Image 1 (cartoon, rainbow, N blue to C red):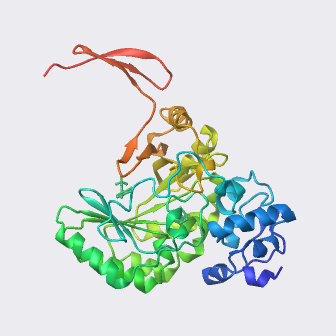
Image 2: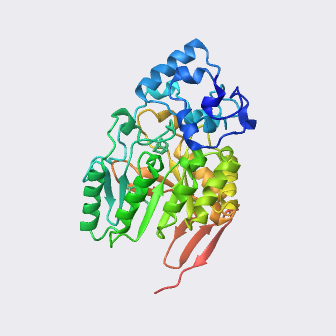
Image 3: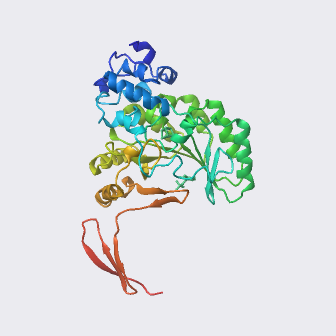
Length: 377
Ligand SMILES: *Cc1c(COP(=O)(O)O)cnc(C)c1O
Ligand code: SF4
């Protein structure tokens, strides 16, 4: 394959952990992204049957993956590879599951505008684009790709922001999508400046996977823009320790140098990170790089992602094996996003064994139970 086009020097992606990008210009990565199974078969050995199957899947749920991200796979030809699972189509996506829904979180019902979800009284989700540098196979918003929802226009975003201005209780705007950092830097600046001008908005959060899938996009021009906003938070999505490469860490460090606290929201994914050891390693590596593990999401029952769903006990077990065994700053909240807009609900091991007016019986991380007296008010 044309290695120049892909922006790295290797001519073979297999066993590619040692492929170093010779050109970290993110535009080259975007141009060289794999967007069709044909394209992909130049780089990953696929047998004809597999190729036909994946092409069929990609018709329903399109693919896009940066050469950088694919190069993190130890073996992109291995369907069990945790990196491959997240980025390459799988025939399971079109098999279907019993509970799956196109919009399990009922986002469309709680949207005053197509690009605004207002579920909680004091915060909103602003969906500024449907595009991503990589289409994660487990994405909760696969419905946006399926319907190919058109990108909101600046006018529509401005209308949504008028609504935010009129609802004085809204104190936080979460900018998401798609991936907001796929927008041109000037447009990101424009949106942030509009949000910043709303007096009732105290805090702004960008949800993005860019540092994970295309770290070189966090360039100086973008940092110059982000640095201007002093109430900005960035939440990223690392799901596997292998994603924390030197480049990805550098991208997060650049954001941190802009004064932005970087937090992480992982999705619990079968065959990727549904293992206490993998999750502990991931969260400890995040902490070591000052990235706070914020949420661990139960994978939503969304169309095309059903095969990623683990048992809820798995999430509980992971938290149980982390809490107390490693620093509290490494332990995310395990949350289930309630069906139909019920909101995020923390679930986890139960440490409160029983309670009476005299006190509570507690259980610690070593599974010792003891009584703790209550103060009568
Ligand atoms: C997740 C989410 C938020 C933010 O919730 P936090 O618990 O503050 O992270 C806000 N609105 C919607 C619709 C969401 O899905
Ligand atoms: S980056 Fe986020 S919105 Fe985009 S495909 Fe991945 S999970 Fe979905």
